Length: 203
Image: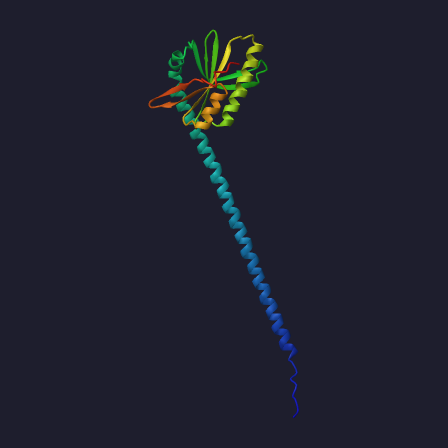
């Protein structure tokens, strides 16, 4: 029995391959277009997220400033009486004091400056004091001591940290640095004086 061999239709096969290649190319282009569209959409989403984050930061910053102002207005009028109870006679009290060199370079900023002929108390006010805020206040006290020495101011400088919300760790850390801790208590506030293992530090 003879075997009949079929001759392949090379033209038809080439046309099919060419059609498949064109279809594959078309699909790849569509895929590239979808990828580009997705990339643009993601970039726009990221841009909107960055813008939202920026606006939120601005709003929180303004809110934080308002809280700080509210705290200062609530705390400052009563600080004189509270420190009087601790034996510190306040003769003058100032808010938002800028301390500058003769070169007009700002040395530091002080939220509340209390003074008499013998002592000065520098109060830093924060919504929620952190360990970093307390370290910054230590640095502020050192700068003020150096500036006082340059002006032959022999008075003793003490520091205080006031906060709307005071964590226990931060409170302990502030007391350990020798600061008075000022925190809300009912409709007023208390001043905690470093005692026991800690004592009010003087610069």
